Length: 170
Image 1 (cartoon, rainbow, N blue to C red):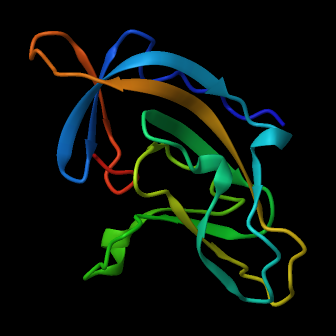
Image 2 (image 1 turned 90 degrees about the vertical axis):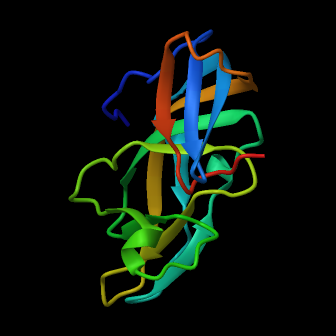
């Protein structure tokens, strides 16, 4: 499976400012690695019944520990609709809890940034067909970063990213 490669937003040794839960925390990138799209990066959400929804599915591939940051995109491999949601929120309006809705025809998702901490990215999977599906798969690819917390001096350049809703700040 060949998916469109995209450049990492930062490099080893760089300072990263991550906005999450309306706070900016600063980290030094200790190590960066590519997460290639392929069979090892395929997530099977299960076998949805006809016109059914698999709600709030958390995936092991994207569950990461503190000190990690994922920068990923994904595509649907089966005839499903996948919504990425902001976990742990009780939204007043549905749109405040919604980050992206992807189908096999929409192409790759926008970049998602997931900061390893207390919460994980959650996915809602919809089978739009009137027949059951044997699988509901998506393939993820991108970059992973190992981070070290740091105090920002206010002078050096910073690569910034918005990870609102995905992950927490300890």
